[in-house]
Image 1 (cartoon, one colour):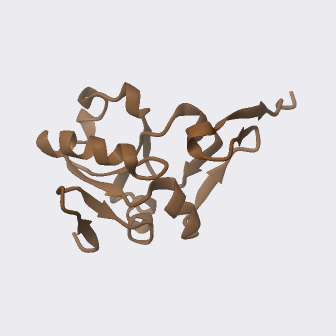
Image 2 (cartoon, one colour):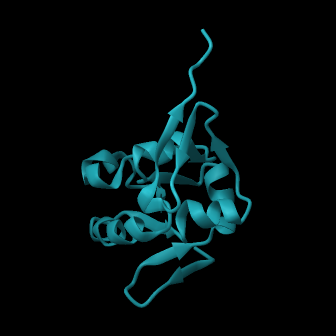
Length: 137
């Protein structure tokens, strides 16, 4: 696959501008491993997304996608880097999204933002749900 960058530890990354077309046309599946509150607030726009928080991840969760290209995404690329070797060792076709949601959004890739959920905090380590906006019945 073109436009894959391999770093010294062997982790393979794809930049948002290269990942977006693969995700929008269904050539790849997005594995979103962010926290539930991050996922609830802001989502990558992709044809097919599997959401499993990093702390809850097991191989069994994605075994059915073994033949597909999986792009692992998180907030900044830190947790995806930890998951990459496990998936490679188990023969998954996998790459990490370079710098996660941070660069995806910065580079103008499509996102879905919830109007019912807001976060507050000065950095990712301090993010927490700010408020839930009640839905009109």
